[in-house]
Length: 315
Ligand code: RIB
Ligand code: CA
Image 1 (spheres, rainbow, N blue to C red):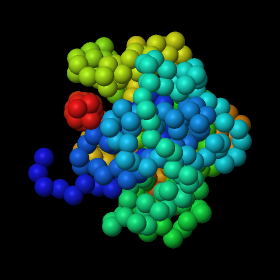
Image 2 (image 1 turned 60 degrees about the vertical axis):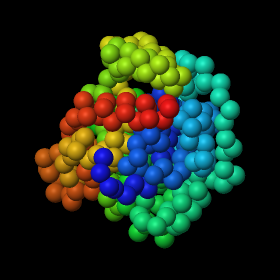
Image 3 (image 1 turned 135 degrees about the horizontal axis):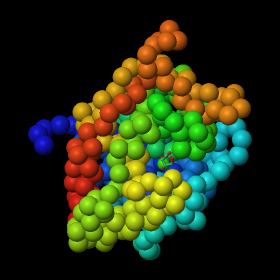
Image 4 (image 1 turned 30 degrees about the vertical axis):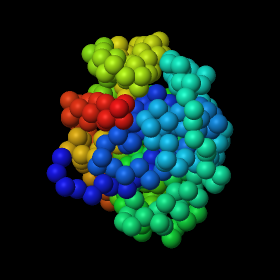
């Protein structure tokens, strides 16, 4: 894989079946140096997403990575979890009985700030849940902004939504947070449903996890089997899309996605469209671009990255 300096990253997540794969990819690919993991309420309540992050890192043997819990609710409004998709625990399916490390006794935003300040080079923030923690960091600690290389987030869509007709879950959960991130002036990459719906955990994918012959591989197979059942029941999908690890893959190998530099606005006031990402693909608004929006995915390259990383951490 040649000589390279691993890129420092922080993953902010709400595990969540697909967040779990994102964490395994971030912990398992040597091109990233996972400085820390922060958790946010989203797919499940904060206590559950935090416990789930600890479990996944423990299963990956990455117990030395600091984990801090962040926001238990969006900036405005109330939290609505996604039990129908991720189950009561947030990671329903497999038996995840594993000794876990301690949660850091600081807020996620404070851990992010410390890790960024202490890093020897600018840090990439990868967000795979609602953007509440990232927004609080950018607004509460503007001094760290110059030391953030970029923000890469899974969220939004150039097309339709999944939580409301035009709203994707991470953005709908906290539209104001997404608005703050997109107005921050930081280099920002948006990985929306329009590409994540191409990364489907098909039966051959599940069989490949199972065929690894490791506990972690079997757990990934069981996670995807549960995820497949809920996505089939709720959305009528034949196979579940693994949204979040694409945000990590795009940092590891930017060639995995193709992006366009366009203006993205978050609808905050629409009675029926609050939380929609309004992506001006044809520059009709005259607004300057504020995000690199993913418009295509190299699906095979993505799965190769993910499977290699899972095999690597599975030992
Ligand atoms: O809409 C999909 C996104 O919402 C994913 O990040 C999933 O984990 C949930 O957080
Ligand atoms: Ca997520």
